[in-house]
Image (tube, rainbow, N blue to C red; front, side, top):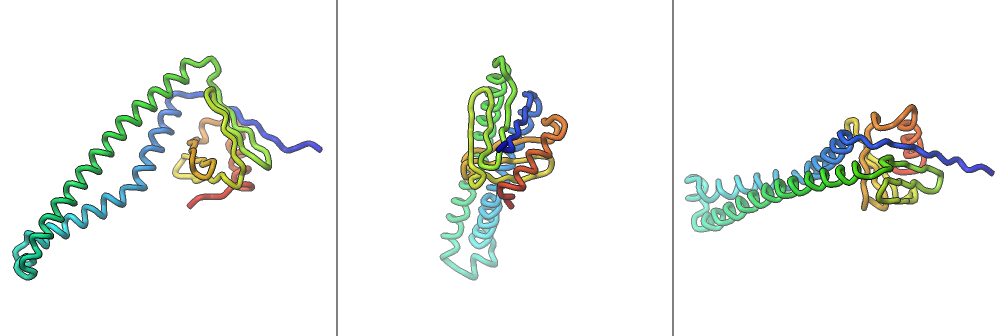
Length: 182
């Protein structure tokens, strides 16, 4: 009995790798930007209740509590913005370091091995395997985000990285055996 196994080779392209990893960073931070929006709304609300004459006279002494609360939320906004820029700088440095590590390797290609039980992703540094039940994917714009090991590891691909019909083969396996994430 011959098992249906596909091996997809992906050549290393420095610009595409950088673009994929930078997209993933922005995607992750965009998901958490909802918290920043909430904090901004709370800050405006608390500062309005604390400082605008109409509201502060109407509620009396508790307006002082709203003032302090508004300043605490304002401080939290600065903390979130600081964390974003610090994390962005650190992540972009790590991306450049990873690309530098790739360029120094003799074997620069990665591969994806697909069969009906597992998906295995090999690159010059790691080999990661995952069962299909612990694998899901999401397509955003031209990016395919492949999550393995219950969302513990993510791999980002674009169609232009693949040769011939390899991208369609990967998508076909993902649609058959894994879950599409919303």
